[in-house]
Length: 51
Image (cartoon, rainbow, N blue to C red; front, side):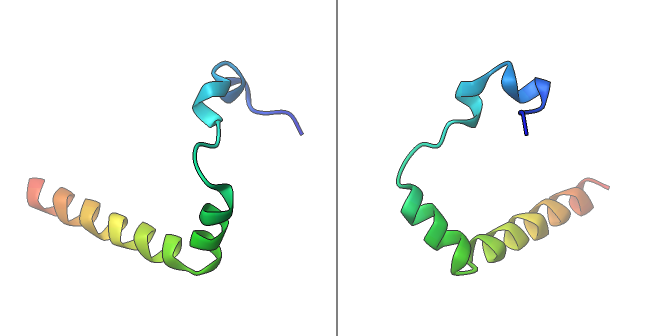
């Protein structure tokens, strides 16, 4: 399946940088999910403070 046009225009934006095995471990361990939810909670808090 080809990349969407907006990603295909700048392939350097989709390059993997760093240790791919460490990234896979980060995702599989569930830490990525926890970090994502923490980031969402922080953004929600910031938006609530604005309004």
